[in-house]
Image (cartoon, rainbow, N blue to C red):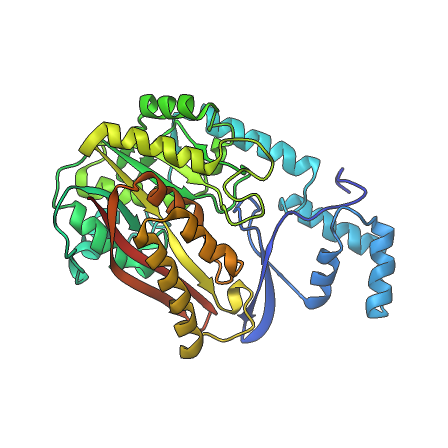
Length: 409
């Protein structure tokens, strides 16, 4: 048996129902993408996994299993199960920690932050550029009513291109009509990373469309203003798609070498500590947004800020005990519209208060980057172009998003 802890602990996982050969199953997966792949389990096996909390020994797990199911659990069977979980990086163990250290070191020493292959990113058979070209030209765009002043910021989805294509087309079709700025500050969501505060990376982004440089001078100045190193957990960027998908769209419309980026992942400020990092490490998100706003305004029209942001995540796949019927989706839209109205008002505290008031019940994942965008660009006027619900009733998933443009007042 592998050298794991005598009190085995399962890493954070997601569990959702699925079907295999038309039979219901339960799927366990690692949301961070670090484990080798999802695993199908029975309800009985899921009960065993629930006991891997770092507080129960193997003997205690066997006793609790027998008490719950009235069946025995042989020691060698339990040990084999834990061995398999550890081999697949599902356990918080020395094996996993060694793997993580190697992954982090590989990221730090790599010349660029390397994207997945074009197919994984949604490319059709004729390539990623052709796929994105169709996205921009085959969707009827919603154009802004307010055409005064330069574009200072955007909200685009971080959904995959297929589900979010209409909103992507709205904002990136608009940008394609203008010359590239000097830099794009791209605010993303830290879905699965380790940091509790803002995370930056100094890596250039290499995608199937080419390599775009990171503006390290701008990033260094931002860190000096915030009085902290925001790259300590930069490995969080490696598997995070919310920034990457915006970089690729910008590369497509402007060319990868015609602008620079400042890639930033923002924490969720809906917890009990608000905009302060929950572990006390790193910059207050409110302070970060203020410093970023000062720098952007000083830089003038040569800088644009983009939030790669989705809104609600609802349905059985995300833990709701309701089907995605019209009534439920209308309720979700009502919540989202209140949030979008708060964004349009340019009042960051009110925006947060709405979400915290109902415990972010619809799981809006991008609160941090949306808050940062409107706090940093308080002088810009947001205009909602489109609200969209991407719903798949078969998989029990509903994800909402919007396209928003911000222009200088």
